[in-house]
Length: 139
Image 1 (cartoon, rainbow, N blue to C red):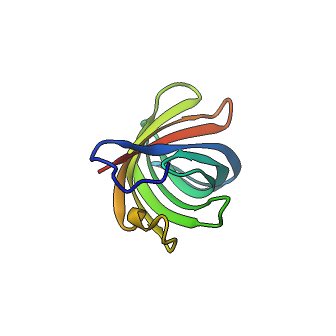
Image 2: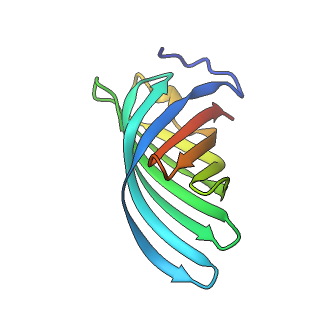
């Protein structure tokens, strides 16, 4: 489905990724900073492969701050980049929930309606399965 008529609050799509290599960058009295790379699929208003680089600061109280930079590419060769950030919390021994905001950009004429649009993101992560699911909603 390629459309430019997404209404505020509507679902753009969902990203499902597998957690890849990660590095513990810092350990402080307040928590630890982790960097990791994920890859997977985005499905919804378009379908694409996704590569993410994430920085997560996991605080001692179980809350976290995160930032993600992503590159998505369709079978037709269209590239979409995004920058997202937000907050979250550990919701179980191996699970987390996150929320935040993403900005998407592309040089693809077909997907140009994505340019400079902001999206609310809501996601879950599972360290037991090493999988993340993130939904993007139009702001």
